[in-house]
Every structure is written in C-alpha cells, then in structure tokens.
Picture 1 (cartoon, rainbow, N blue to C red):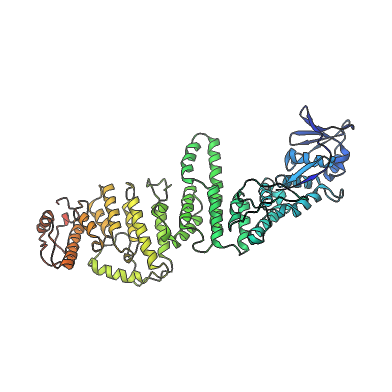
Picture 2 (cartoon, rainbow, N blue to C red):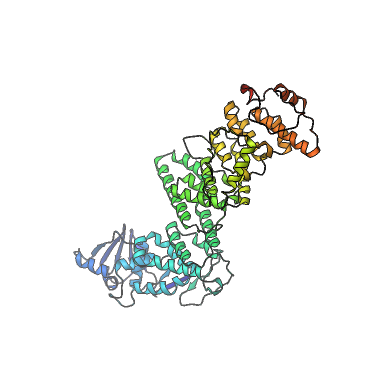
Length: 567
C-alpha cells in the first residue's frame, strides 16, 4: 500500500501532567483543547497555516500569556489534530489510506488551504489522494471504508464519490489490462512509497477477484459501489450474483442459530435487548440491500442462495416487498431447489408449526403463474371441493385443461417441482401441529399431469396419518382425495391395501386397480390375500369378476366408508 511522508524534523512532542506539548526554546503561547485533551503550543507555526485558528485567536481574549482555543467538534479527534500540528512544526508525519480521510477532514476544518500558505496541508493531501490513493485497489477500498467515520465531511469533500468511482472503474477494467495492487489473498502486501518504486508480485486474478475485498465495505458503501459496477454493464450477471453471495456469507452468517441466541440474550437485560435490536436492524438492512442488488437475469444466483436469503428474511422480519421479490425469484428457478432448501423455519407466534408452509405455498403459486394463460373453465377449489363425477373422467378432463396452462414453466420443470413438493410434504407431515388444510393446499397446488406416479404423495399421506391419529373420517377423506390409485406402484399398492389408516374407499380402489393391472399383464386375475377377499365379500364385491372402474355409487355403508379397521 502507498504512503507519503511530509516534514523532516524529529518528533519532539511529549506529555507532561496530561498535557501534550512540544520541546522548544521558545515559550508556548497557545492552548488548544480538543475533545478533552489539552495541547500547549505556539501561535506562529500554527496560525501561519491555519486560518480557523487565526480567527478564533482574534475573537478570544488573551489571558495572561496564553490564548485558549476550544475545538469541541474537531473531526478526526486528537490523532488527526496532532498530525496537523506536527505538519505545522515541520515534524515528519506519515500519511496513508488508513489516516488520510481523518487528516483531510481535520485540515479542512482548520482551513489549511492555499489561501493561507502555498503548499499547505490540504493541497498536499489532495495531490497524494488523486495521484496515489485512487490508483491503488486496496488503498481505494481502505480509504472508502474509513469514510464511514466522517460521512458528512467525506461527502462534502468528494472523497466518498471519488473512491467509489475509482473502485468501479477498476472492476470494469479487464484484468489483463489492469495495473493494481491485487489483494485477494489478503496477505504479504508490499508497502509502496508514492515517489518510490513498487515491488510487485503479480498473481493472475480471477474474474471475481474484486468481490472478497469489496465484501469488507459497510452496506451503504457497498450498495453504492455495486450500483456503480452494475451500471457499467460489463460484468456478467453471474459474477454480480457471486459477489452478492460472498457479501451475504460475510455479514449474514448462521442467522437461524443466532436468532435463538439473541432471543435468550435479549431477555437478560434491557441493554442486551437494545444491542440485539441494533444487530437485527443492521442485518435486516443488509439483506434488503442485497435483494435490491440481485441481477434481473434468471440463474444469476442459485435457487439455494435465494432460499437462504428468504429464510433469513423471514427470521429478520424484513419488508413484505423483499420477501415477495425473493419468493418470485425462487419460483423462477424452483426446479433447482432441494427439500432441505424449502424447510423454512416458522417464526409466527400465532401457531406452533415447525416450518413456514405459507411461504412455500406462495412460492408454488408464483411458480404456477409463470406465463399462465386464462383458465378454460372455472378453477377447482383447493379446499372443500366435492367430486360428483367419476375419478377417471375427472382426471382426463383436468389433465387436458391444466396442460394448456403450462406455457412458461416447462413440462420438465413441473415434473421436477412435483417430486420436490412430494418430498417436502413427507418432511413436514411429521409436524403434529401442521394443519390439514395446509397439507391439502400444498398437495393440490401441483397440476395432476405433473405427477407421473403418486408413490411419494402416498408416503406423505401415510406419514401424516401416523403423526395425526386423531383425524376423523371426513378429514381422512379430504386428505386422500388428491391420491390417484392408478398411479401407485406395485409396492405402494401392496402397502396401501393393508394400511389400516386409509379410508376404505381408497383401499378398495387400490385393490381394483391392482387387480386390473395384473389381469392386463398376465391375462388372468392374481389371487388376493384371504383377509382382503373376506373384506370385499362382506361388501358384495366379487374379485373374480372382470375389473371395471370403481364407481362412486359402489354400495358401501356410509358409516364404514372411511375405516378399514376390520382388515
């Protein structure tokens, strides 16, 4: 990194009885108080370069042998003031990206300009800043980060905007044409004098070499810099997405685990509660800024990363617009997700469900709305729809109508999403607090044609029935109405035929379709277990007759339609 030395005299400042002074044969005649610290100095070297001190001394009465000057709002504190004072005395001072902002603000405050003396501190700092700091990558990053301590001064002096412009221009420059101090490894960087030769060790930077260094910036500065980078139009959207991921990993780690820790910490004391609130507010601002920076192109970031952001947004209670934007983006790439990605913890205190199913339902609705044309017939009700037609006829009709509405989300994507949702249902079905209505809403959100088989859906239903043994007959009927027995495998049929938790109608359907499948495969009806034969015979069903589609008018007593406890 670059540095500049000014002055040639040795450092003669010392501390005596909590007062900073400078060794000199001339008696001091100026007392300067800076934020609780007192300096015993001389008028001539300071007033000859500081216009503000000239004015303050002329306005304040002289007491005994000293003028007393108060600087309560001095930018940069005692360190910056002492550097300015040493410059006035000709004492050697070293300036770099780490202190140039503080000293530049202090010089502006003291009015150490060319109007007072040629070659004054403000001018020298501007030359160093423009010719050295802005030409170095790491120097620009460090300087920009230090402006957060003096935001108003840095904006007024143009330091912030010039650093952002310099960083963006370096990112937009092709790496092979770039000459900068590459700092991706963050180790063993060479110091460099502004007027001296630089010892460089070149390492070929990768395409996203800049992302890790920029991740050190605070969110407001990072947002402005990324806007400048994106507006250049030269960086591919996938690299922008990777940079955002690096920043999120840096500033939003383990949000879900921290949430529980923060809750416990917050309950200890009011001060801890305030600290937790401040951390949460900062993380919420970071997440919303990242969402606003996401590239518009599909696939610029992974679906897994989007869902991690959505989980964090849910936990941090970000704005509904941010959560909706994330849900919409997830829906565009939903076929890439895994079941684990969709397990979004619930933070609602209104219910005790483990996972936020409503958010997943919203994502599915967004997925199904992709380019969907208007329906050709009145849509099905997700809840409380009573079938009045045969199941097979209804399925054919639904398959035809819903296939016409699959214009944007490809058929392959819907097949993958159907498998994903069924796997998700199996996971959340174990939650004893999961409402039946939400399970059904998820199951019916998938178009009929998207499920090539119903084995995974059957497993989810079976798990839900075991986790919720108190369901009444009507509720079990509603739970199983999405299940199509024709799409069950032989293994699933064998399991379902002996599943005491299923409604009887489902068991009978399974038996008939399995009997029909066996007849079509071998030309004869396979032998059924004796206990199943007895069950069918009790309801006047002859398994030896050729199989026909099960009608909804099959005479099964109403009281026994939804129970197979007699098997």
